[in-house]
Amino acid sequence: MANLQAVMHISSSAVCTVIGQFENTQEGARPKIIAVGLTHTDAFMQGQIVNREHLLSAVHKSLQEATDMAGVRIYNPLISFSTPLMTSDNDMRTVDVMHESGLIEAQDVHLAQQLIEDDLARQDRTLLQCCQQMVMLDTDEQVQDAIGLRSKQIHVYNHVMSLPASTHQQILDLIQDDEITDRTTVFDGVAGAHYALTNNEKQQGVCYIDIGLSMTKICVYHEGVLIYSDCIAVGGRTVDLDIAKECGIALDDTESFKRQEGTLNAERYSLGSHVIYKKGTKHEKTMLRRELNQVIEARYYGIFSEVFDRLTKANLFHALDAGVVLAGGACQMDGLTGFIRTNFGIPVRRIAKPTNIHFDPKHLSDDTIKSLKKHLEDNTLHSAIGLFLFSGSEQFARDQQIAHIAEEYSNPLADIWTKFMQKWQIVIALFKKVA
Image (tube, rainbow, N blue to C red):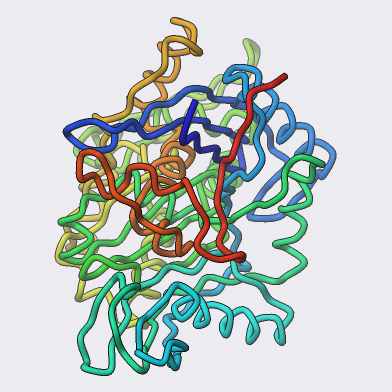
């Protein structure tokens, strides 16, 4: 099987490995999923490894399940995760083109990233991800792909996401294997945004907000490029803790109780209505429904106030012409979109399932395909599948400085994985059949 890609997403609730490929069709590159390994775990919370042995076991189980299903071995997986320890910034580096004629080559563009890495190393930090925004030539012409053009000097603009070197290495150590030779990392928010956002939204200005179990991931795109990213140590679990404390609900019961009885839509209940919480069969607690919902409202208002305050300080809130796109389990709360429109006056929608994902019946059983379609319907694997889709994107190819070659159907994504341009270039998901 040619052109296989392998990705792994590590979250607060699961480790998911996806193996797939991009098929060349007359309509363009068609993503096909060949194998999925999904292992639930609570060993990675708020971007920290809380139980290394349990997380290591989940990683290996997820990898093994996917590789057994696909009948291949993984050599260079793409890995996504998030942590509040991440910081981000927009960066510009000026580079003198090496070639006498001014012909721009991959190493010229890559040198800007190397300068960033050197500066980070002096701070004991490392790159989580670097997204190229544009390259400006000495004629002030702005281009996305400068390779092959001519300029004596270039200005390379990147969005840089970094984290402490030790934190990054601890994640990489989880996928340490004799046959895994390289591991490229991506911010969870970028993976999810690639799944959720349209090109038009990215062009107009949009904020992707993913509220997961223990973290909230944020990405802002404007004029087609990533200009802001962030990760906040608050999530659906925070809402559960509030409910447990304020309403006297057992913490283990708050998630299901919140989904069954909670709402952010005040029109759905009368002011005097009650809700009954039953613990087992012996105890029950009656409370005013508005008491429960006021706790939920307060926390969600706090989360989105924090997000929008950060965007306002970055002078970005006014640039969100396409509004907000919501993802993550905590964003399934009833009435949330109306709550945001009412309180913050911004357009908002939830993510929709992609329509171009296909499954390989040769490797996936009918039951597995049915389960994966359910995940697509519920958008519960949006970060993992988004990471797979991102691995076949022009943005990722440009970031990695992988050469584009001629495609049979004039498809810009097809076969970009087949050769190196320089020794530092990273090629992901290179496989061989299991002997």
